[in-house]
Length: 185
Length: 183
Image 1: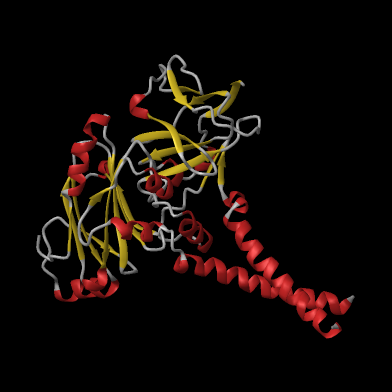
Image 2 (image 1 turned 90 degrees about the vertical axis):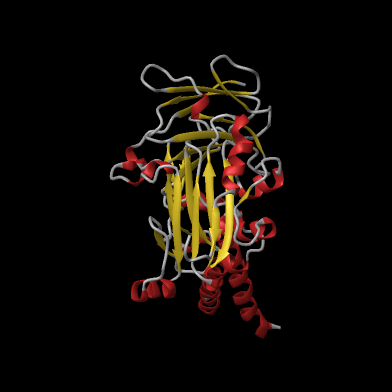
């Protein structure tokens, strides 16, 4: 029995480390490699032929249609500016400027099932005098620009900027995407 | 204790090898990736507009509900592929993606080609033939060199209004995706 102890240690350690690390690096741990812009995080390099093996594995596992870098960039937000989880029964404001683009969209979805419950696009928006956006994200109808959360408990926002070169230029790390502030719950 | 540490270290190294193998092999064995899902609905050598009402597909492929999508799957092992069509005057983009999700090529309506898409997709051997013997291809085609044979062309089209969706879907399905070398 004692002879089996050490080989067993090797096998158990290898399996736990091998599969555990793989699962972590494709799920929660993937956030560690994301580029962050305030509350938004994403992988601007994802849509290129030179993506790293982790991103390839992530794409295969997620099953999503890839978005080429020349087409656009997608960011996700799961927390507000105060680092609290986004909730569908709260009211948030999204204010600021978007980097150069042809079109942008914001989706609200369930972070687990990925079911989309509402979306808005730049073509429907009212903009401020300097091109700034002021969008209210809430379960009840709001004046001005409004995105319905459908009252979900936990939500995730997806911001997609189409035809933007802002993230491939030098100094792109200085870009400020619109902030997400909780107003009330 | 020293012996335990040695065996534990061996476990860690083996674990690292397993980890790297899993990461490298996942794209080859994924059965629910975008390619496999589209293979069930996409016809051979033709663009199909993805159904807006299919919530399961939209969720799986993580489609943006603001856009209309047209896809064509093809295999360069049977010959180079030519994508040719005219789209409505709105924002559109096209990507050519490998089976594992890598985007080989992408462009948008603002890149200067107007509302026309003219792309020829070649694998390395076909590219060599093209350079050496000069295949007969239509005028104005942009040549894309693909490192692998199994590819998906994805066109995203933005309908300014929902009422335009049906017409835009027809426009997506009218894009040709064929191996005819002269178009």
